[in-house]
Image (cartoon, rainbow, N blue to C red; front, side, top):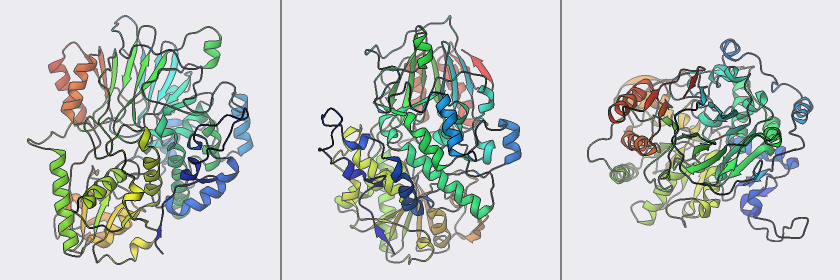
Length: 589
């Protein structure tokens, strides 16, 4: 049966309950900060996973890869500590590395490794005599397993540790083999989408002494993303016989959780290892800047004695329905690592986001008027909440009638976190609580295959590209052949995915939707609306001029996108060195 969800059940109770515990005291009797900032107790974790896995398995990360063991062994070699090892063996290695108990880390939000430095200038100076070494660990040059290693004034930092959405198994992981001989002081995460964080437990297997730094809001998200990935991999192993999965386990995620450290935006912190600073070496600093892409997304600014580097992560320079634009206004750096996602997509003349919203509103109204249902495929984190906010505003204005909205289990979890973090988020509609504005109904496993589609229902389901074994995929198979139904895309869908094939199909065309679903005939209404959470290419080009770096490294984009940026930057800024780093190859800048 359909069940309604109004609280986020976590380990040891709901997050709403955790934020309402003023009687909670520390050992000195002083009132603690809200319990939302504390990790739940370990003894509740297995119970929480068993209770929540039923919904989470439906919300498969976008393009989650299948394994290719031989290719992975060729690229990466064996893991120093596999997920098949016993838990005690893993804990012993972590204990020897100084991680259990924590010798130097201060766990939690705004917990600093060596403390925070006094606030310094936000802009970096321009120097040209020193070099930093950078390695692009993405196994391919396109959008994929985002991971950048930086040797910065003798200290090693890994920025992001993602999983490639198009590759399979170990071949989809970053090229950790390229940096196994490096010293890694820390790992900094820009945001919690799977292509930026999906292999973090594997990275920590290779570098058990590294501590993990991430934006404050991402601190409350990351464990849920990783546990969901384990559920998905376990399901794929059982259903498809993929012995290599899971690449890591629930216990492994639990074991690394104590070294996650959340930091507020615009706060400068040291990140070098304790052993180096204790020996008298000075530490470079790191600062997160609000990237406006999704909750807890950030650009990362590194400062040393003479050098500065800025990594954009995924950035959005325009306001969305909830989140406001990135706040990168004061950033200056010697070296810039920049995403190029939309480099091959020019902005049409007279295009406005509000115009796209109005088109979508009319399309939904027409679909509901003819008693058809509407499916909006969306990422569980970010896009789902933006669409829910848009629907809530349309219902408030009377442009849509109030009715239940069907979502996935993981989307419901992140929606709760969006609500709980509203007061600490740079956003619009600060008083808009999505769970209060909507009658949200979680679509249980298998219900999308049997429930009636007449009567005008609205579904906001993962995955955004309709990957197999997701709720959006299964529902789309039923809707595709019915001319009353509508499927509206609000973001990019790769042409090789089921969503991309559906977008490309003409009305009446029969095509292979997916290996599991086989051939379907498209008779439903399919439309595409540009409500991207990535920066337009012209805005990114202007940002290069603002940063005024001596070198730009282009990543997170296909070949055409990177080529457009290279040509435009060279024309506007001929003195800037432009680099398209090859996978696993070190470059000095």
